[in-house]
Image: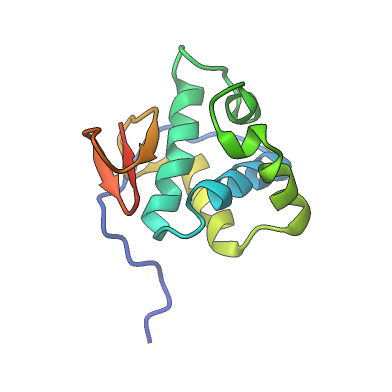
Length: 130
């Protein structure tokens, strides 16, 4: 019986972040809101975009500030992330957040994602990462 995670996309290790449990929960809640119905690789990809932004000089330098930057992540702006934290986050989203914080990425240094469509980039499930 296979009980691990099946990875469909190549994984690259970027930089590792040091963070606390609250920040990990925040990232997991965002992952749940943005990609809760996507594959594990899609979940890690959303977390990787946040971590890539922290690494970029074009964005704030903390996970919390990136997530709550005005106009960046709809679920953070409309209260869904906070509601998800209050309701709890499933273990797969928590693990995806931990993996992204540890530097895993399936989308290279992509800084953005949206529903798959007319953008080019890494397509994982319903999203394109660029």
